[in-house]
Amino acid sequence: MGKVTKRDWILYMIVLLFSAVFLIGGWKMTTAGSKLLGQNVNGSIAPAVKAEIVEVLSKNEIFSQYTGTVTELRTVCYAVISEGEDEGKRVLVTHVMDSTAMLTAEPFEEGDRVFIYEGENEYGEAQWFVEGPVRSGWLLGLTAAFCVLVVLFGLGKGIRTILSLILTCLAIFCVLVPAIIGGFNIYLTAIIVCLYTVIVTLSLVSGCTFKSLAAALGCAGGVGIAGLITIVSEKYLRLTGLTDDDSMLLLFINEDKPIDLKALIFAGILIGALGATMDVAMSISSSLTELIANVPDMGFFRIIRSGFSIGRDIMGTMANTLVLAYVGSGLHVTLLFMTYYERLEDILNVELIAVEILQAMAGSIGILFTIPASTLAVAGFRLLERRKK
Image 1 (cartoon, rainbow, N blue to C red):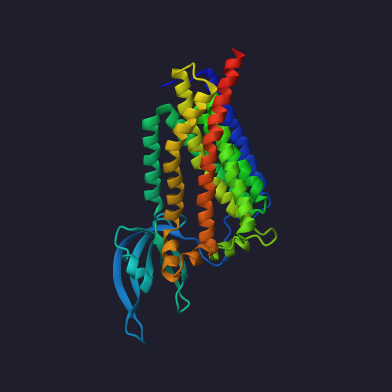
Image 2 (cartoon, rainbow, N blue to C red):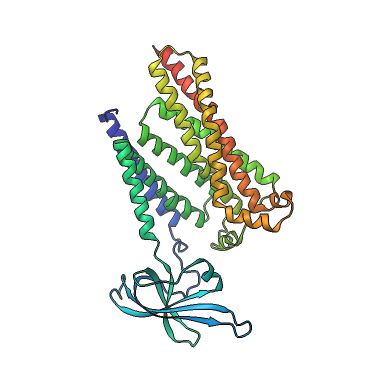
């Protein structure tokens, strides 16, 4: 395990200062005068608050007067509000489950933590309703467990890994997302955020070394190819970006500066490819750097052969990672289209499926180009280092 030097600490401080300027400046610039973030679109829905169910009073089945089947299950219970101005207040709440929800979920019981809101029933009377379960606690627990495991396995580097992950998430949610909603150029913003992520991640994890620089160049090459393929494919596939109802809603969030949905596809593919290409670039760069350290007399072409050999082993599994990730995230959509379409060609011509395939293929091709780009970068730096001697 390498010792952290004074030079490393200076680098980390510079990276953190740069990140603070980038994130705070980006947030202020993209949200200046904007009232779009966190808006209540309907304007009439009361904010939900956390509560704990303490007593279940009744579970009533509502039958259809025409078919005689159960159409709703209404659970009436007492709940104690656990946040806000009414914290500690005991209220009567109703949880309404329709016939579809009854097939996939169970009614709430005592001890369950839920979100509730105050609304009106069918008679116009004020009434508290259950909005849904509180899931954040479990998710935060999983996240905390992940962070602890990374620190235990990686020690100092693990801490820097968590820090780089936090900064990456902040860049996406504090710069990229507000910029998209605010009507900024999505292409330019996505490229800037990706460059920031590469610089910060590699600087914190591996420091300012030839290994990091080679990995950065390899990653830039792979992501650049993925972005270029996306731009060209948007034209030949005649993509509109209107893939589902959510995209239609996005189009009208900011009527003064409508969101460019085609650019949104570009940003999504760029960010999706960034993680995989950075992984491949660093794996190749790190492996070759370690190999050179143990075999100092390795020549330029021997380094290239070794890099391609390592890259071929990485290539298959990493391409599978991208494809499986996209298929897994859209499995329900895939099942739906496989059910309603008889021919595979009909499915491929649906824009939603076409975009998913484009994401997987552009990212995978980006990985392929990352391998030679990273290898050539390491070999080139090694050649320059020898000539200096």
